[in-house]
Amino acid sequence: MKFGALITAAGKSRRMEKGNKLLLNLYGKPVLFWSLSPFQNCDLIEEIIITAPSREINLYENLVKKFNLNKVKKIIPGGASRQISVWKALNNLKEINYVLIHDGARPLITQREILKLIKAVKKVKSVILAIPVKDTVKELNSKKVIKHTLNREKIYLAQTPQVFDFNLIYQAYQEAFKKKLKSTDDASLVEFLGNKVSILEGSIENIKITYPLDLDFANLIFSRRALKKNV
Image (tube, rainbow, N blue to C red; front, side):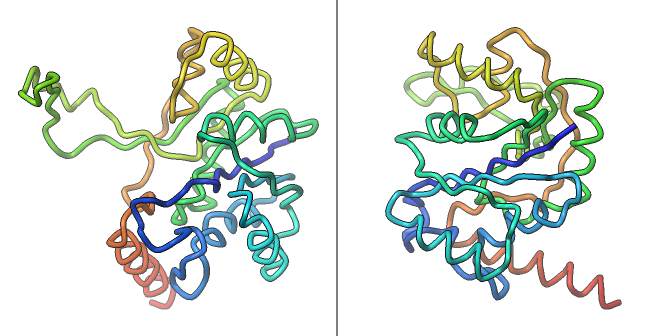
């Protein structure tokens, strides 16, 4: 069985307001380095593809060379949306049985979590990381008035990586484009096909870097991890 990783890193980082957030410094290295590193160091991952903003492909190439991320086989320009970017990348993966799709903006993923997903997907065809919500969840109407209070015990927040049988996710993307379905989540496209998606409980540390404050949280988490290693 061959496992590949697809790292989505072609976003515009509008909410960060500091340029491409994946090139910002996090605990001494670029955010994107930390997102790639666990896949690079995982023995079961054979190939990595990165989607990138067209104008910054050379910057990503320099990062890959600088840190000797030799499992990165291609860096391709992303599309107008995440969905289009992932589709383009899927068409550049070669002879892969399973693919892990991961947000480049989640630099705190660990090898342990990657290996848990790989182990689980051998029994089922689709597995994602997700965490239960902590807060009460309200559904609003169009006027932003509360319509329902949802049962939070049944609600989970999806994370990445999400791992799929390659043929299944490829088919899901094909069908999505045929039926003009749009989603920011890969698993939902598999759900649209009528297939089941299993979850493994993720970690609250696996945050997505979106706002400037998220970088502060991520630096704190890396500092705590380093402290634990030295104890």
